[in-house]
Length: 83
Image (cartoon, rainbow, N blue to C red; front, top):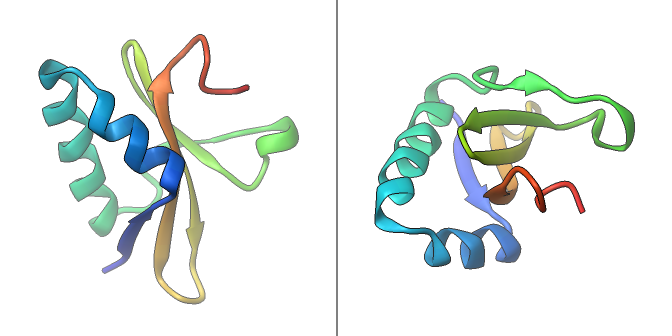
């Protein structure tokens, strides 16, 4: 079982989400505690990270397998999350 921790950016973005997206995102965050490989491995400058697609949102996270922690870096809409 992994612990899920959110960065300051992810906390801020989660608070700003509309109610219809908040419930979906929080459900996926709960699922990450059980399965850190839920998302797709990313490439390029994000090669150590994974992403979960919840159209039109994305969750970007990095698992720390040694300490059993999942760091959620960002939560946001597809157009601006990778900036």
